Length: 272
Image (tube, rainbow, N blue to C red; front, side, top):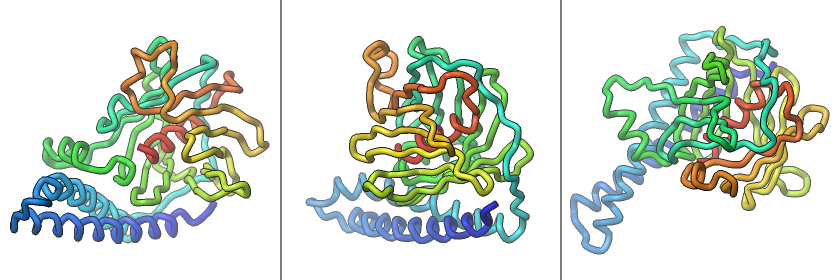
């Protein structure tokens, strides 16, 4: 398997640099507040907490990752047994209850939930996660999440390493890293995100970043689903109209592996 330790080390450095830059911008806006300049006072009140909290979160996560690499052995596994869903509806919706709420779910059009991912809270003080949620830039912040299936059983731990570029990791129940994501530009200019399991490209998501339409294929180029980011299902507009996410139209509906659903959750967290 690819050296996960070296990837996490790169991500830690990137988060430290990005976090440090955002903290500097935050301090700049704080100084603007303290010296009160009428033309920029309101903007400074808005941008100071946004940059400062986001930057502090990234910086702390980067330090934590460095400490983890220094004191903990990174255990990996090329693959692991995975849960499969017997049958999915043709059309589903994967979204967050609110763009500032880090609990996401995969639903059918009636609102029944088939899977969920909820952020782990590591904060010592209870107000901290609320402040972090409301005063961070969602697409940039880091986070770790627990993914549960339709039986409410934990399947994976998902890690999103933030910054202006993100990377996702998956750990199994034994705590071993089994997969990670990698993004690149396709030959036709399309955005491609791969889900690498062991030495193999297990899943691939390819599409247009601006239209938000993507196709999900496996290692054999078999199409499993098409997703439409930001689209609202007309048959359930009242239910999902205010929920950030995307429509999932399954081409393969039977025996859908949980690793594919986990990949979609990581994509969700990386784009909002």
